[in-house]
Length: 183
Image 1 (tube, one colour):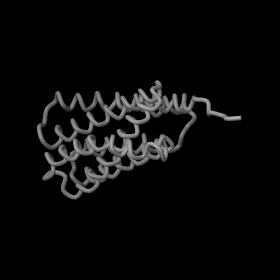
Image 2: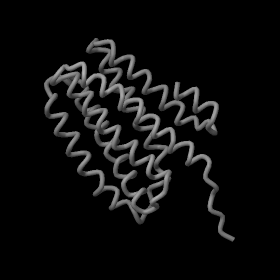
Image 3: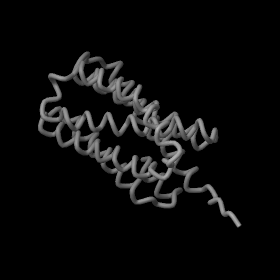
């Protein structure tokens, strides 16, 4: 639904459209319960995060690289802890999930530094989105591999939708901002 909304309201960033399609594919593959399809879903999920990172690369400047690297460390450590909890269940997809954790952590670092430097509504939506992605993926891992619970599953679904909506809000604001022209 968000993809259709974006197609009608956005400037049609092909990278964002591909990322949304990859995540939808990952969702279907994860829902199957098949371990082979889980691996394909893991690759689809990392592709999704990679495309989001491509969208955010222009927010990285020479001046803020170190700050972003430091800001992403707590997220990465948290992800590694969650991965450790479910290590035995990841099998062949362990490296993929470590890369996914790294990319997601970098996105979180970019969001924190961007919001801290600009303190704008666009940065607010990006920061909120990255926090919700972290919660959603953590809850997904816990529910899938550690503690099966309908309540956690419903929380994953809720945060899935909310995290995508907040990133969508960031994209719309980013696309509608006027470029700074220096004369």
